[in-house]
Image (cartoon, rainbow, N blue to C red; front, side, top):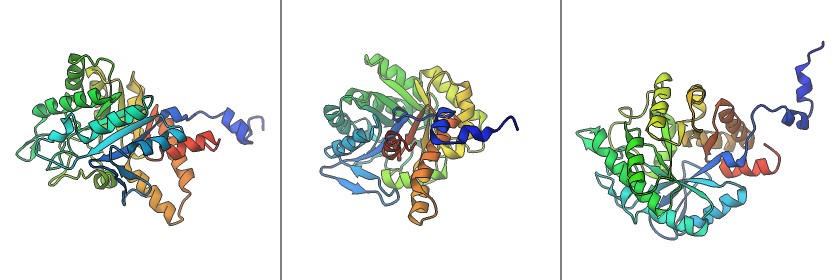
Length: 324
């Protein structure tokens, strides 16, 4: 035989030299949950190893994140008070705004990304204002834009709208630019599916809807071309980066979006994916570190320039140690 593909797999040095997909800690974004209060560091039962912090204890987590080699975090807020309009989301002294100011004070060189949505802040758990039992798209846009502006003024380097309202990126861009915040980036959840993989997150963030579901505004898992359309619309409206969510079950969507995108593309390895790996590893059914690494490689191979994952610190350490 003249052609022997196995030659390229003979040892680790050759495998690394021939690798088509390469990961870097700079690709990783670590999601963090921040709840209102003081002195809080509490476990999240549905997501082993993940915790909720209060704004004053958040720097402890950020210190560990930095030591691991991760430079970007995505913040989700959990307020004490909720109402029908989600008013704590755009309260300038809200939980995320406090967390951003505290985080930036201690770690000015970390990239802080703030999730922009109302579901954690509304008493009904939906992502916008209600009209009957449906989310009323257009009046919701102003509240999302106000939220993004408040977060940017508190120190967010990027705002990440995850609500899936039509026109939200344009509304946020106009609000930011009108306030002189032209340099604040928009990292849009452009292609977010109505997925059952979000279950553990809803426990962690207290964001489950009190009635119905989110299929009226989040995407239908059966559709790919619609996802490409959503991505292109968000880019046209001013998104600087876009995201596909969930990650592994939607690699075909990720690839299709990457093929058409002219901006960086992210993928979110969501709570359900994380918790399934954790649960299987706890039972000895698989090797947690290897599966977490393989999952990240798959997302990058599928087209992700940015990977949002709860395994970010562990993956960064593996990269530094030469294991990944």
